Length: 321
Ligand code: NCD
Image 1: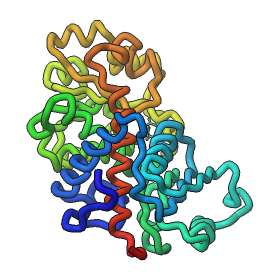
Image 2: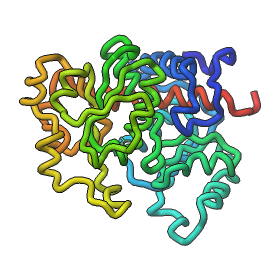
Image 3: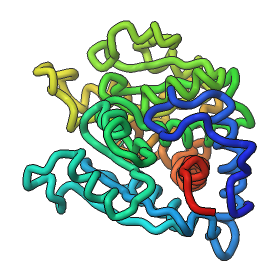
């Protein structure tokens, strides 16, 4: 990889707030850039000096393991200076507003903010009120754009293309930011998308996004090339005062991907999961660890894809040459 982004190939956006910020050409550029970074990550010294002059703040107002570590590693591999902040140890607990917290951090000459927040729209809100490049690392039930990018990238790597691939997203679609970002990303890239889950976990009018809805997992598996199994977002259930399903046991019986169900579909299905997995609920260990499972490839690709996103967004930040 060259040290600086080729200025003739730029993203069309200054922030990554949601997949809708990106055109197909942007996604293609991110994927080609990630291919280069995957090669860097296979070298003995897994690091490039590209972002030595960039400082990034990782602001996590909601729990995260994988995404936080993945962003942090991506930034370190690009040689950026980074600061990490989680809400449990911050002044937000003392009543400070989000804008004040971020403005204070930016006053210390920070160029980019990677933020996870429990409120949908938090990243968009921040981008309108502070002068820094914002990357949405998950905003409540709304979007998780880098997860969708790494998911589509992993499908492209495994099957050689995304266009025309049949992907079923299974589970708690209603509360899942991964589902919404995946729908937007896969549709842009020409995949066929089906959603599968109980009616109570399916957003109303979701077909208007150009997806099919199927409530029978066996039928969905017979249709698909790829099954992306989602975790029940237990922490977000009942926010509307409604219990969305009777029990995890019943959910697992109807929507859990077992080896028996997988075999019954009678075809090779690529298995995905954004993590964290609840083994025995949405997926059994046998399926999660199956040779057709690309769950750990998704995690590996996450670093290269996030490097690409940060590198390309940094190229749009005005800075001294
Ligand atoms: C997802 C998330 O946080 O939205 N996980 C992740 O980013 N790796 C999915 C989930 O929590 O179920």
